[in-house]
Length: 203
Image (cartoon, rainbow, N blue to C red; front, side):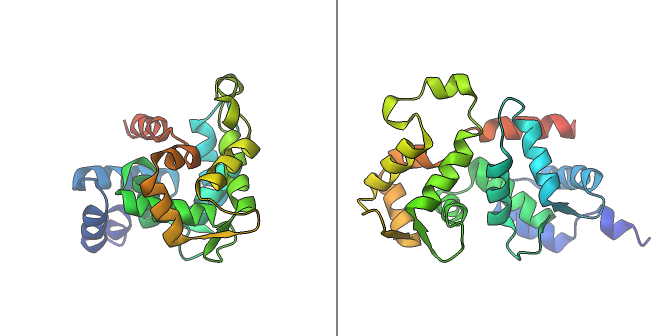
């Protein structure tokens, strides 16, 4: 009997995740079983999370990006992701509501967690994104954004900031909502690949 609670989602958590994500009850229960198989202790460590990302991107190096994504979703900063944090992460990176996604994107770029984003933080995340783009694809990027430095500069220019200025969360969200070009520049746009891979794992 003692095991039943650990192998089934609590009704309370199930209802919370259903109302805060786009997943159905059947999907969440299925994901939970897969989650427990991969992580019997009910939590994913940073290195496990990096390993999951690495399996999605065999032709690139997602380690740095995975580290930043992990940081942005480890809401209680305990060095692990529980099932709730994991599902919220998947939801936001693969199709959450725009405002939720932008709040998460801000947390991703706010590397030091001080509530603002600097130009160097934008460059750090953009570099991590570039590590995930295969070399052949990088060669096909437009001339003015084919290096992390050029892309970070382009983002900074969109916000009209001076070199040492900072971007607040409100400015960041408003700027991206007003200009879809910024959204394209700040995100790694292959969540579908991750979703497909996770579906394969479930089957």
